[in-house]
Length: 277
Ligand code: C2E
Ligand code: CA
Ligand code: CA
Ligand code: CA
Image (cartoon, rainbow, N blue to C red; front, side, top):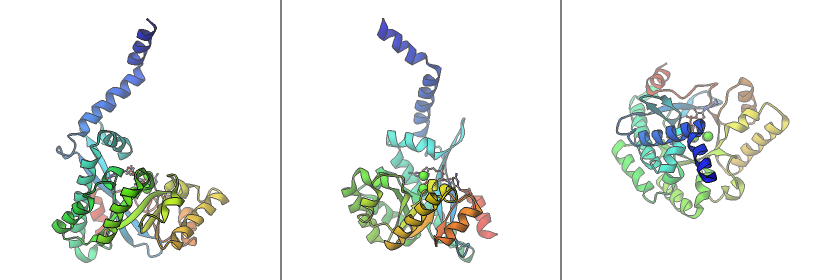
């Protein structure tokens, strides 16, 4: 009788029940999202902090759900990772972002930038055929490897470092640019850093938001920038929201940055306007 009572409680807890229903419904809906053309890419410009020129754009996926409206990747990427559907999403993003970059390049002189950054999941990062997949996209789009930056998190690399290193080295040999995303938020960042052939460090937004709060916040960002520079890496600060943060980052000689202070992620039409303005 006791067990039955507990089961009833679990089923009829309205909050839990609602979460279970909506998560499994979304999980189900997500499987058809690519075919129904419900996924779209937004692009957030990455700026050279000194020249104020756009240096590249980061592709960020959104899901236009027919009932629930625009759903953030923070919400559906974890669901996609659990179901394995993430690979299909990553492949779609890779192809769509590369074709878009090709379009921008053929606009000619109006387009200041020639790099698109693409987020890849740990699944994608461990695919033995990833390099082959990218070779194929390069040949269909006519892009150069140096037009593509792949953003990978430490957490993804740490899951199976030995396999990740083999794949990253193949990508690197091909000429793809590799960027370590959310740097400083995973664990064992420092002990692993020199094993991975990464070209760029992206300083996580949490560090940037503490930058102007206190001395410690400033010292941490200064240390990350110096570390990256000593390892010959480019540095991108993410989530720059205030003039004060920008001023401090320039003083610390941080080269690149992105954030709401410059621009939110933009739909293609809005990005085209920015390019032509
Ligand atoms: P991320 O790669 O760290 O992307 C940066 C996130 O910060 C984006 O959120 C962006 O919109 C947001 N952001 C940019 N500037 C600012 C700022 O100044 N202030 C604040 N508060 N936020 C800012 P978004 O687009 O919701 O993406 C969230 C995460 O979802 C991404 O974090 C990434 O981990 C994942 N994601 C997004 N697109 C893809 C994708 O195509 N594939 C995969 N595998 N993951 C993706
Ligand atoms: Ca990213
Ligand atoms: Ca990031
Ligand atoms: Ca993040």
